[in-house]
Image 1 (cartoon, one colour):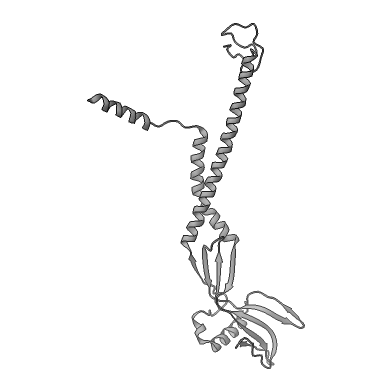
Image 2 (image 1 turned 60 degrees about the horizontal axis):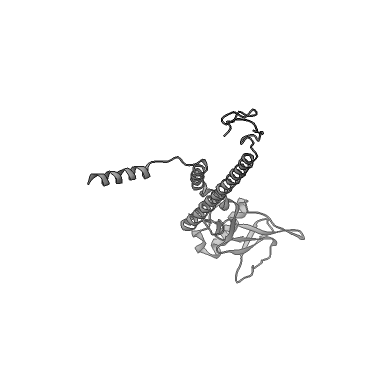
Length: 245
């Protein structure tokens, strides 16, 4: 009655005992851990390289210089800028903006309080593009004109161009998809690398076995190929010291 139970326990101990694995299998497990650790890196790289910024809602305004030198702003109405009697010096575009990052799916969404963008600046007969408006007086004039034309803009317009708070929102399920896909790609790359190493090892072993069979058929040393004709069994090869037989 006890003998079958003891045999079953012996089999369990035998099959559950740890066994030494080959170096390539150990390397494969290490590369899997490395792939898991590096899987968020492609997400950050894609977010840094791929981005798009655009207006959520935008409007235009015209800049005029009055006779006293002051800059006035005329906000667009019904698709046209109502130019006055002043000298047109440029146009601006304003509105809340959004920036999306990531590829092939958007993983990071950022909404920025709007800055006035100067689309065109007239310099004599030339029209040149310029960057974000940094001039405090210009910003104040544009802000005042926007608020006069649309009082509801007070909820998103900022008082000065140096205040650029951003509202960031990560899209978690898209980010999780990118991280999992990156982990799978890295793990498959590691598996392919190990498979190539294992295949090369098999080819090398097959070539060595074929060489040993050819040397044995020609009565040569299996290690170095020295002619072993005339040597007795258990004598050593004069060239490399390998035992005969």
